[in-house]
Image (cartoon, rainbow, N blue to C red; front, side, top):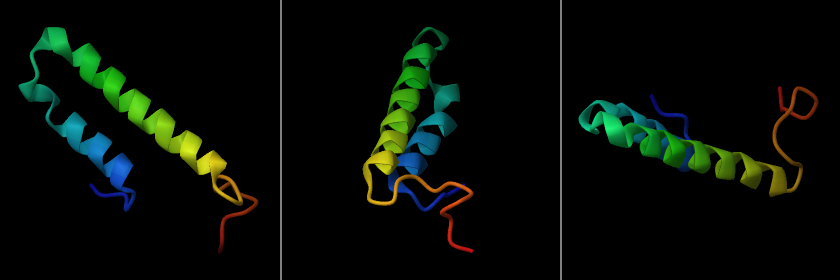
Length: 59
């Protein structure tokens, strides 16, 4: 599934490979994905206009 956001798409692609990661290393992968998504969301807040909300989403 693609979202159109390269960072989010990369995080989702990383999760799709989780079955190939040894069980003892999976927590690290989840941590990487969490950090990537958190940083992506923080970047949205820093853009002019901020992150989309129900009040500022174009309809």
